[in-house]
Image 1: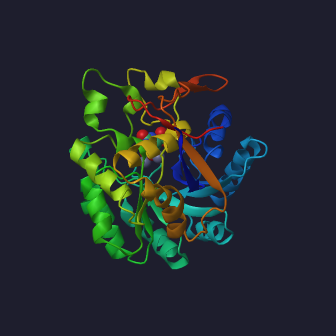
Image 2 (image 1 turned 90 degrees about the horizontal axis):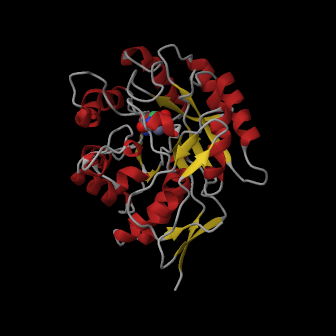
Length: 347
Ligand code: NCD
Ligand code: ZN
Ligand code: ZN
């Protein structure tokens, strides 16, 4: 018997769409399921000004499939030279929904990010004043700090001091991957939320490293040990509205993933909702899925929930998902959790 699950249409609160041929190829995979997405600004060069965001939004609109009802929620990439007036104008006009902080060198295309956090304090103060949220890639980049500890150390050394010095600032801890991240959100109820990805709910570092290294599971922040995954699953399935979906779907050409120095990012957009239904069902929490995918994010960002719905179905046989998506120049491998998934969104 086929089981169905109808949700208020989901949004994706952390998404990489890229540009050019890649944008063209991956955007339909998001618009098929999601009504809105917070679009990451880490293009090369990054989206740093209001004019950059306007132009990028127009390129996304031009690449949106005919008939798709999709709103990209734009962001600016915070640099040490960000102009607070330009930012405030972009936010007041409704063009941008948030500003993104990348510590310099922390992840894919983050070279223009922030090295000296004191330099951006005036911008953060302005953001607090106007109510513009700060989305944070929360990892330190010091060579001395082990990659598996970088999120926990960032919380102590960077995030908590920023929040104490600009207490009115609204912050989203993007793609949290540790129990430390979950605990920090729970202990700080004011103006703080966190997104969680599909891969961090489904996999731990053993899945990536035991029996051979699997480049398609390599993303940043890196997958952690199992107890951290369990903390993320309990946060996501708890119904706590401070935790919501940000897939961090991050497409890279397959040749850049299957390489001597593998690019960081998992391309999950096509399978994200099917995978989440699987994960929430396993946790006996299918009734909490709608909050995570469709209600908590809009509430945090002060937006209404979507008005239409999306229905998932569960079949007796494992679903066969497409292996990859093609751009004009390359293929992009679709995330595969490595075990059977029975849920899908019928087309
Ligand atoms: C993202 C990308 O490829 O742009 N990669 C990733 O591993 N998550 C960047 C990011 O979100 O940190
Ligand atoms: Zn990131
Ligand atoms: Zn990301």
